[in-house]
Image (cartoon, rainbow, N blue to C red; front, side):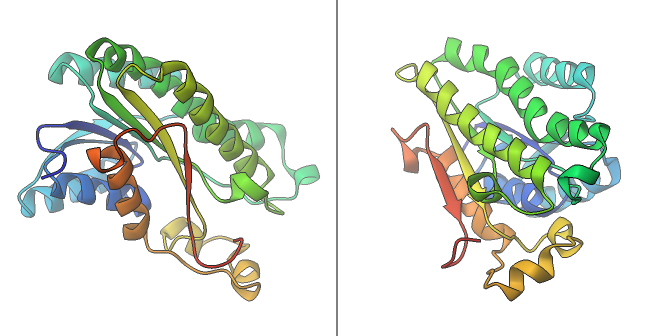
Length: 242
């Protein structure tokens, strides 16, 4: 039980990668706090975790709303006393050429994909630093490393998240807190199956990775298996640049 008695807050836990991460962490003994704006999806995930003998709680939150983020973190810290593991997973992607993308669409993606993880990191770090213990895993993207036509806002936000990971990780090094990120390529999730660029990527040699492969990488980074490892970006994809 790699994460026994650890309290893990996971955003976007209602489906896809977030759901797989919740299962992986709960399976290793973590008490998982599932954060999403879809209550029905969260209820289903909690039921499955409890069905396999794990423990989970729900936290309803729309990451586009800053006040909801503050309230969610405050509630978790008040109820459980600490957050040992923060997984910033939730993201949205609207595919559209840069010059045709309305500013509000661009801004919304940055709000969810970068600003929300940044705020959560800012809110959770103080208690981790006080306890001299904690791990943060941000889910970035391979698109943040190389960009992607039609995904300018998503790729830019993920690039910013990767560099936030490395920069803040440097600032807190030596204090018992580790911050890393995972950069998946195409993953077999609901979001990618609906993607307008899915066919293009697959025609050009893209390999589809399973959510479980990403979740296992997160488990490695969140646990003592990666002790001493911080400020790193781990790419999870097949044998090509996608």
